[in-house]
Length: 161
Image (cartoon, rainbow, N blue to C red; front, side):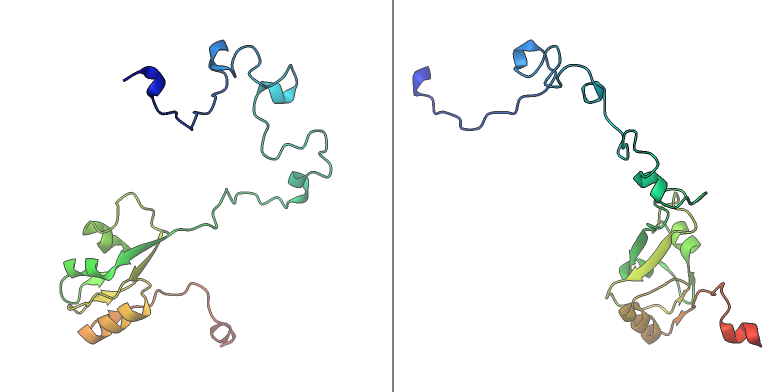
């Protein structure tokens, strides 16, 4: 086969910046121009130059001690099939799920766990976690109980007497 008979390739790889003079996009300034803020490094996400008095950062409220993205709590879903590990009338909570290896030991105590799935639960269990409607029905059919987590906030009726 002759090299002139080879089929042509239609796709070219993209040129990578700053990979030397031979790359076509490299060398001295690498398409950034000369000097200036944009030629040097990355600019912060919320940077607005000298406009500080009316900047976005100044307009947002200051919440001390809240940390970043604390409101985004992940809910870990446990399948109802995993409950087959437990024995009759055993308490199923966060600690027991960790002991039986269903949940990772690295998870924090305040992680939300919910039991979902349509698998049949054949053993009566006492569950102290949020469950779906179908899991609730399956557990009650098997003779188990759902223990509602104690609410920390009192209702207005309890406060008034």
